Image (tube, rainbow, N blue to C red; front, side, top):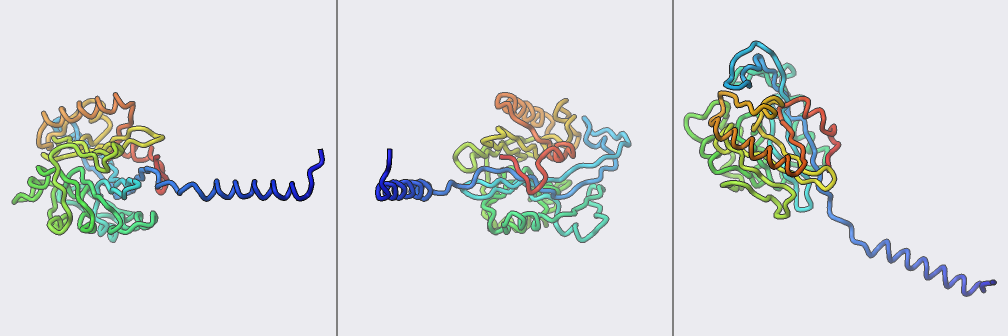
Length: 285
């Protein structure tokens, strides 16, 4: 069958119009939920016995990672923990902290956020697992963000004298920031994708973070609920935790949650867990 030139031109014009309409009528989708692992330092441990059940010295040296996590959500960015102070990066050999550990920072938090096109003022929420110096080291850079903290944690960490491991100068701007004091769990964005989990025991107001990713599934970031894989797998409680009973209860609660969700539990201080995550700026989604 022969098609006249006029009819052929009409058909092509119609098809082209439909293709253009299909391309332009779909609005751009919001940013996908993503979880980035940032390198926020490392700690050289002179005696890993410090983290055994009851904290019995064993002379074994070790190393702990100090990650931060950035969650990109259509409603804004959430930073989980702020790591060791970026100032430490000025000392190539690291510095000795108040506990006697050698701490190092090779990549600053600010520089890593910049690689994602973010400034501290662009971060909507900052969630702190707790206020020890290796988790709140850069807190003062985020006065424009909403701080998600358990009410008990803030009261404990701002007491006089400061508890061991707490350096109040690292989060001294808390009065200027938008602190949202929590009294338990919190659905951060209201859609179930990112949840603060109250997990007291290491400190009175310790918390962990649950992220429900569309492809990866459920991921729980430990904070210091556990310091090593052995702590998690064998329910080990170091002697310096504020409550052994609360720690064990929190571990049981999170263990059940992870099991039911067929999820993944990440021990933040475990180097093997940190290395198993996508290398920055890679991400889980």
